[in-house]
Image 1 (cartoon, rainbow, N blue to C red):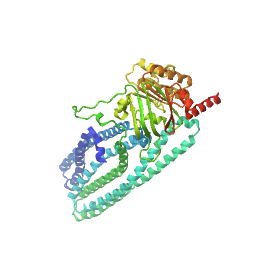
Image 2 (cartoon, rainbow, N blue to C red):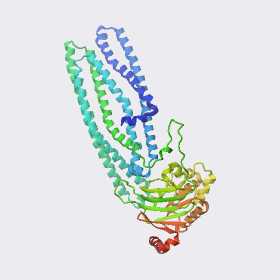
Image 3 (tube, rainbow, N blue to C red):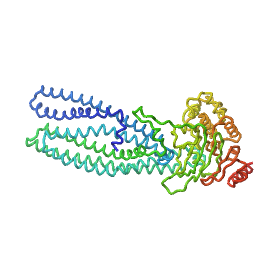
Image 4 (cartoon, one colour):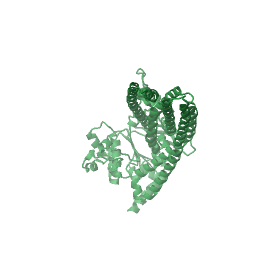
Amino acid sequence: MIRKLAVYIGKYKKYVFLSPFLVLLDVLAELSMPILMSRIVDNGIPNGDLGYIAKIGVIMVLLAVTAIITGIAFMRTASIAGQGFGANLREALFEKIQTFSFKNIDHFSTASLVTRLTNDVNNLQLTFLMILRLLLRSPMMLVIAFVFAYSINAQLSIVLAIAIPLLAFFVFLIMRKAIHLFSVVQEKIDQINRTLQENLIGIRVVKSLVRMDYEEEKFKKSNDELTNAAVKASSLAILNMPIMMLIMNSATLAIIWFGGNLVFSGGLGAGELISFISYIIQILMSVMMLSMVIVMSARAIASGERVLEVLETEVDITNKPEYSITQGDPEISIQESPKVKSGKIEFRDVSFKYNVTGSGDDVLQDISFTIKPGEVVGLVGGTGTGKSTLVNLIPRLYEATEGSVWVDDIDVRDYKLEDLRAGIGVVLQKNVLFSGTIRENVLWGNENATQEEVEAACKDAQAHDFIMTFPEGYDTDLGQGGVNVSGGQRQRLCIARAMLRKPKILILDDSTSAVDSSTEAKIRESFFNNLADTTVLIIAQRISSVRNADQIIVLDDGKIVGMGTHDELLATNKVYQEINTSQQEGVLTNG
């Protein structure tokens, strides 16, 4: 794990390499002072040699200044390296997630990915910083202090030979158990983030259905589980401190007892005993700090495994190898990807299931059809019949389990993902807007578009009029997720964004469900008038949305059960007849 994560130190390696030299200077300066103090106590004071005392005192002051300067420099280099490591790791995680297919994201869940990008990376960053600050300093302090202590009196050093292995043994036992407990804590953080995310995204539903008490109880349950898991892990980790203090204090008492006897017998000077005790305290404090870092590393190990799980995830939808840029060799010729030019779509015996390794049924089964360039095609069927799944296979948001999808007589797997998706405009079932202005959101379709092109797309999507009712017009800030526009307005902005792309294929996944019939009719008219060369796929719940389409595909239980014009299906297809009849009855009932 350390080897895999170390690569993310990147350009901050120089600070990591500089740190040991600064630490060594700091430790040598600090640990030289007790032995110098012993000389003052044992030689300078008994002899009344003020010159000697002054000379040693000046040296101690210089060493103290050296320790301060090197200590500050070391803390700065460690902080830069730690923050840089965290930044690189977060960036690598974010870039990896951007390559994920829908299937990869479904595997982790959004809440878990957020936790890994924030909490887990913070744990690793903090531990890395503590490792630089303590894991470098503590061993040096321990070794050098032991050398100084041993040089004063070898017999008293036996106490250390007993204390240090005891400390190491207890640290090992605590860490072995703590790793699992901290893994559970991170999973509980995932769970509480998921609860928070669902509540905040659906807060309007929660309030409208008066489910605040239920949500509070659900959050309390997640919060209590996190608290209990954290308390259990912390309870084990805090055992480290009393055990360390017990061993440290016992060792100090033993040194005072045996050392005092040596002083009385004349085998050890009083100053030497004071210095020896100072070194013992430094050694035991170093071991204690080392043990704290090791126990803290238990949580970092749990976080590291979760971060590496994301970084090492095999993305199931990728470009062909020949489209990958080879670094460092400009002589290598990279094959050029085809572009979407006409918008022809063909499904050849396509089947799909979300869990490829599972035993679940196919969501789509033996789907075959051809859509000519420039056609407007409707997809209808009951809820859960696979309409959204079908259109998601065209831009390779999911990969077909069996069979193949072709665009312009080319298998979609033979396109570079960026080039394939550049030729396809998609308005998904869940309309998503981002923080920023209306103009910035629409420009997601084409960042180089002019204001005239933006306004033209908004007019085609029947969004321009309501945009101009805002005091700031196209500069109106939408807020996070477009909270200050209605559902229908949000849909129209998403349609405008897709139309601005001027795609060869436009997919509308039930994207006018929140729009009234009159506005929907105007949007459909703009498709026929302004997107004559664009192949348009419309997933609709209302027959009226697709009745004028060139052809309509009827899905039922993941299979195509009918395909034709509105009149043809109405005359021959039972499923289409039932859908039409139910909607007509609904209109009459509402009327």
